[in-house]
Image (cartoon, rainbow, N blue to C red; front, side):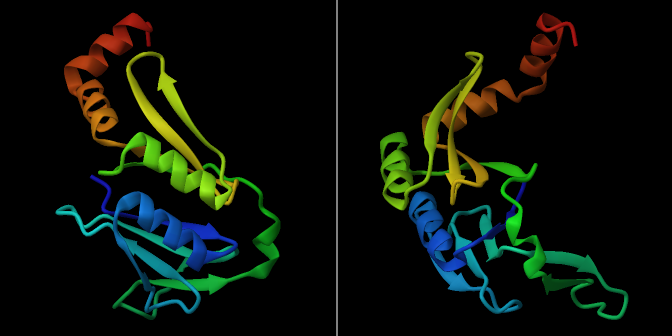
Length: 160
């Protein structure tokens, strides 16, 4: 289970506010890094999305045993358009509402069918960062597919 993720954004506060709408949660300033925000889904799993300014890097540190990590902002990375990170997040929000919220924010959004196994909604945060959202009916399909027996059948069918 993933409890929280961190993403970078050009407009962290605005991104956090939009993601909070999708997650039906709340936004708060991130206390450890100025200009960063957290989206608190307020669900039983403690789901949280940290939204940091573009160019922020997490780096290891050996002299802080409380956090073990330091946040460094490097404005030289602001030209990075895309990256390999993405996450799938279950939300209580409907498919139509997710589309409405993302569209209102000016972000690309599309419902995708993953070969008939399950559906997800791709939301391109600031049209750069991919987050996949699963409303309740999509989450049920995803969870059913990700069970060991279903995955084994998938691997046999695909000869993987």
